Image 1 (tube, rainbow, N blue to C red):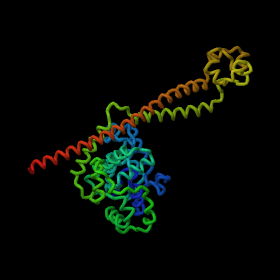
Image 2: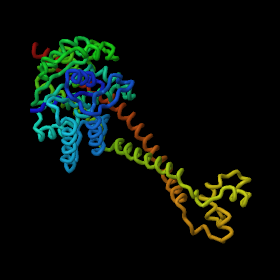
Image 3: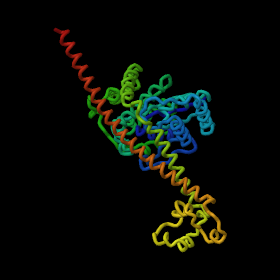
Image 4: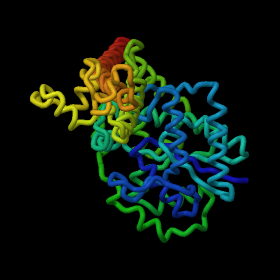
Length: 417
């Protein structure tokens, strides 16, 4: 029976390092992997086809990987289509692989699609959950994406709790990024045993995993009590290396606290920045295509620029662009664009060229782009307001927790009296 190792973890949490180790141990990752970048010089070890499908699923359902909304509601009419596409990728990429791995942080959110595809193909599922100090993740995201600490912690929490919940019922292993870097032999032994590759060689792994691989380091001792419990308590479990032994009840309780925070964070009347971003991207693409097409048009609106300026001295003396003037004003005024039109007494007001149509479309698209840019500015302002609201709500939540603690202490004192 085939086995798929699914790596479920948040961006910047050691998922690439872990999947690189799996590749060194002999697991197949597919035909085309995302190439290295300055942010990940050793590579991402993400299958491009899997990542592309995951991105399409998110966009189709008005989401992005950076969306802090907790739940992703996948269109029921599209779910089966996504599963079929996932199955096609798995069969194409891993038809002859007995043991393989797939990794993409988006899998934390889109897991049900791939779970169903693997089940239909009768492929066994095992899950490895790499984790990292969330404040290191937040620092890394601030450097790479410019995200605030509050947004980064919400994103980390969303991915962590999704991965934990979806991995229930399967063989799973939590892997600490710090341990992977600082105690490689111990961590790799547990990974080998979990995967079932006890005889695999470790020769190449030592060169791949090195202390310099981890650039952001924040001590667990620096975590303050004021941090929300759904982050703070998980950090303590990471520090004690007890995530693998933690009960579902603990995770459920903390996830409920996270959901309450996110629900407050998101107001129903806030504009969907994802939808508007998608709209703007499409309009910009169309505008670029129209501009390229405009450059290729040969008839240039039937205009002979040299003739036009010599014929209409007022245009020449005013220093106006002949094409722009003719399209916007001259044609409507009955001015001839070239000598042939003058010689044959052609009324150009009844003639419409390709260039003119595209020029008009281009002007309209420019206008719409300006309007959309204004919407983006509004969205950015809303994002800032949401972050400020989140900070205020977190402060209020901390105050409530403190008051509750004080109340419980007083009750206990009264009972002792």
